[in-house]
Every structure is written in C-alpha cells, then in structure tokens.
Image 1 (spheres, rainbow, N blue to C red):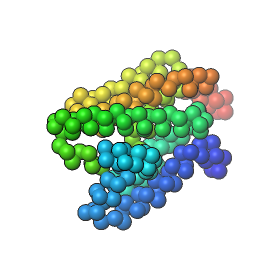
Image 2 (cartoon, one colour):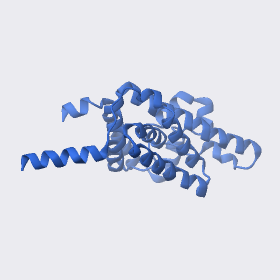
Image 3 (cartoon, one colour):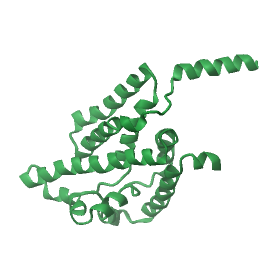
Length: 213
C-alpha cells in the first residue's frame, strides 16, 4: 500500500486535505456554511482582493461533505494520471485547468454583472471545489489511450461536458468545458509517456489465464 501511495503522493495529500475539510463542512451549521465558503471561493470579490488565497483554498473545500465520492473519483482519474505523467506534470495540468478555467468563467460573470445581465450578488457566489482541476486531468488522460480508444474516450468526454453547457448555460458549465479543453491542450506534457491499448490488455490477460490453466 505504501508503494502504491508513493507512486502518486500529490493525489493522496490532496485527498487527506479533502478529508479534513469535509469533516469541517459536515460540522458547520448550514445557515453559516454559505458565508464560510464564500470567503474561500473563487468568486469575483475574492479573486479581486485575495486571488492566491482564493485559488488555493477553493481546491480543498467543497460545498458538500461527500468525501467518499472524491475518494473514488480521484482513484479513477487523478491516481492514474499522476502515476503516468509524474507528480510535477500532473500538478501542472491540474493547476492550469483550475486557474485558467476559473478566470475564464468568472470573467464571463464579471462581464455580466458589469453590464447588468447578471445580478450583482453573483460577485459573491460560492464557487469552491476540485471539479475544474479534475476536468483538466480527465482531458489530458485522452493521450493515455492508444489508437481509436483515444478518440472514443475524447469524444465521450467532450460530449459529457458540452451537453450541460448547451442546456444549462451556467458559468460552472463553461468552466468545466474550458478545463477539459485546457487538459487537451496539455498534449506536449504527455510526449514520451507510454500509451495503453485496452484491447491489447484484455488479450494479454486472456493469454496469461490460458497459460496458467
């Protein structure tokens, strides 16, 4: 287990922080939770006055204390990505997606508030969570696959994030879609890394099973 953890240390440090903050969120009175999280959000007000704090704090706080969900989803995407790319490159992808998608989506909100098409209280909305970084890592994982599997995965991923953007038109939907595109743009970081062919993996497993029978 320790060998497994050492292969993706960044993900497990992040999960540890999420475990602590999820416990804190579960203990806060619901009436006070919005105020508490707004001070740790990447909203317009916090990005204007405390940009670094907002960007870092929003990575470890969530609106719901659902640590089990994050534990599973981090093992599906972050762990494989960090083991494949290495901690430095994985972190570069995750932070790039988080920061750039945040500024793009909140820039749209700022423009809407300035022009009166969005209510002024949108400047203080709660916007925390790991989803932009996650979407970016999901995007770069497209290059983990070989051959046609790469395009199957990439097409499905884009459809998954484009559908809510078209139907919902929310700033978070825009942020998620931009984060995926940022992850896809990180292809140069994947050069020289091994690719995985699921069909070949299945055939190899079947051969080992027959040889051991």
